[in-house]
Image (tube, rainbow, N blue to C red):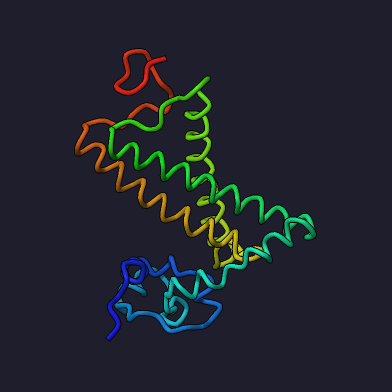
Length: 194
């Protein structure tokens, strides 16, 4: 019948990364091995969710996000700002990871080091967003709120995916190039020298 998608396979392998819109719908999940679920300390029903990327994307409402940014209270504006920042940072980090995979070095410093600084800040932002999500998950049992129009939840999910990509690219980097580039250019370094 239905072929499992790569996204559903990832969720089957790591059931703690189930999308919040799918959980809100109370949908059924792909079958998970009971011993895998038990080893994570979750009861089987708590991680059950059918992952449907199309439905998740349809639950995002840009007009609700815009309305919250223009007319919302301080909390809603904060969630929108963090969500937009997370999406931008994830985009820059993805660009950096693709460049790293292809060349063995991250983004060039750019004029006055601005591009390199944006790259570094983006990595820190994504790691900070994931840390906030993990701490919230540990304290409350669920990740960050979806935010107005789903922007914060979307940024959270994409941050996890980009971080996973970062781990894969890091392993590939060491395997293919034999080094991890320095975060700050150093004299005689393998990538960019000051």
